Length: 392
Image (cartoon, rainbow, N blue to C red; front, side, top):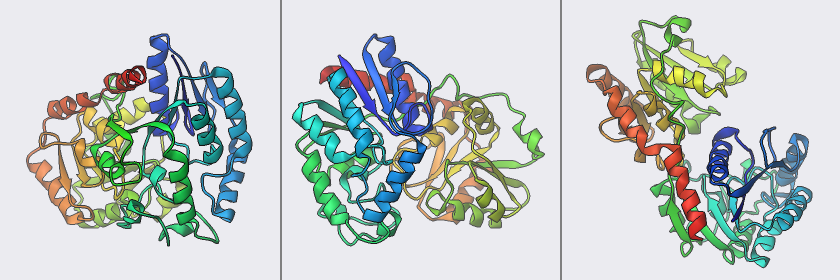
């Protein structure tokens, strides 16, 4: 059996780390496999890079100008297809292919003509919409029948609204594929079953994390930050905006007294300057070990995301023994239960505050948090991909 994974990144970012973890398991089993990627520089055997940062930026610009998101990047896609022809894989596993890293028409035509079995992990909803990876924030359900007059068009196209055209083109290209859809959450599986892909086989394989790294870890983080006497409320994101709950954190900070300290990780310099002084902003870290120390130091992890699929940050926090308060968003609530966290209605900042105060009075047991996280061991979760490949 030969497997090729295609993703925007390899061993970088959430989807890149998932793809690399799957590759590691395949390597251990002696199964020939590759990752095709386009962003960043990742070292490793059979990690093949197509394109570069400048090329991807140009394709992103073309996408905005012509309103044809997903249908540029012809030259690197042709190079990918040439390599696919040489490898002749039994299975092509798609991840994030909407970072201007492939041309859908060329790729899907190739896969269909050669009758390649395709596994596609939906890390968001982009595959079955005209433009958007997420629509929960604006409460849109047009994708269930036909995308048109897109409210988010300006985020994807400078001039024209081609959402209806792209929706129909995706449907035309994807439906003929020998495709198995994988979703990280039950919530996303339910969304797929309302889309034009409802007749495709869809299975749930939760995202997993490295429990050998994310675990209760001795930490002097509070001491370094001078907040040893504070109740530490932690938020972690690669991008901070209102969709990720930045505005809600600001509102929360205004309602808390000086017993508490909010720390946000992953904040860029521009955003940091706009935050109130009672929020400590830290830049992004790519070190899992450093992040584990931060999670372990926190008294509670808060995730006020307003659109998400299955946020691994929730799992990372739990595995470090930190309880989680999360909005009832997407598959976020599938990660926590009553033993380790609290789910709050989306947008209810006062509900987050009440949940925090309840944890001050009745803290969750660290062991219960860790026990819950053990359900998401990446070695067990990603072995299900190997089983899926073999069944196909």
